[in-house]
Image (tube, rainbow, N blue to C red; front, side, top):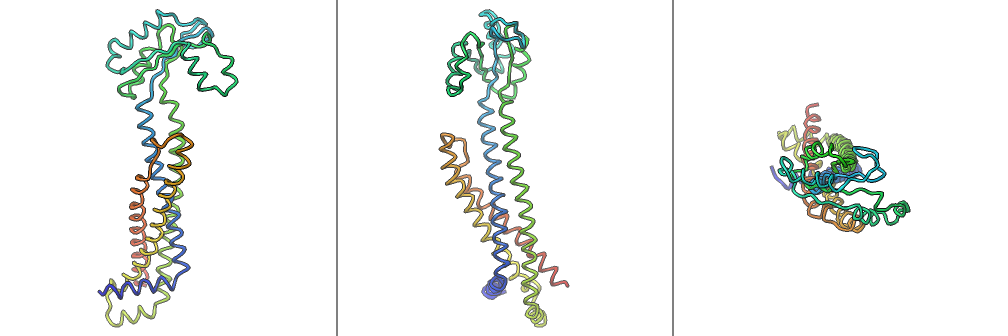
Length: 305
């Protein structure tokens, strides 16, 4: 099989069906861009989950003079009650789970709260007397938080014991939903691209039906006849895939590491240009493989008619 002749036939088919080819390129471009975004979103979610889960803590909140929940009776936790909890954290069996325990006095909690909510008028009504102390517990394995919660919750002077990972779950759930939506749209667009490629190949074959008849009469093999049409689909999808890869890299370069990084004050937790460059070949591979399979099935079914 002469490569030059096959490529010539493929490019000839692309020129004859220029409008359909442009449609294939655009649909492939849009669908694979969504695929790339979905992959990067999953990478981002996993990175954030590992980072924050490893740094999440169990927070032990002690009673203040206004608390009536938990083990509180509108009396601040005494020094003895706080000391009892601290002793439990460094004793058996919790010593095997607790890496570090840091106690914040009501005054320190007050100062931290004022810093976090400096622009909120409610902060002006707070005072150290209205706040209880907190012990921040860092675990060797954040998954063991339930062990600490069960052991400490019943102590006198303890208002509540909370696994701070619970505050992260809604965020990850939202990001996961966004990623699933992107994947859903991408799948629908990829189906549309596959069907469009198949239609384009069948139209291209129909427009050259007389040539195909002559090639069959002179003994051309099915492989020789099919290859130019498969190349048409692959080349059109390749262009769309390359555009999608470029779009993903541009989104990360100019939006994520630019605008978004400036907004959150740093890019240490965000996907970077290396992640985008790593996704680009995957998009090209998906586009080329799907196009090749779609075109191959379409032309073989046409030739059997």
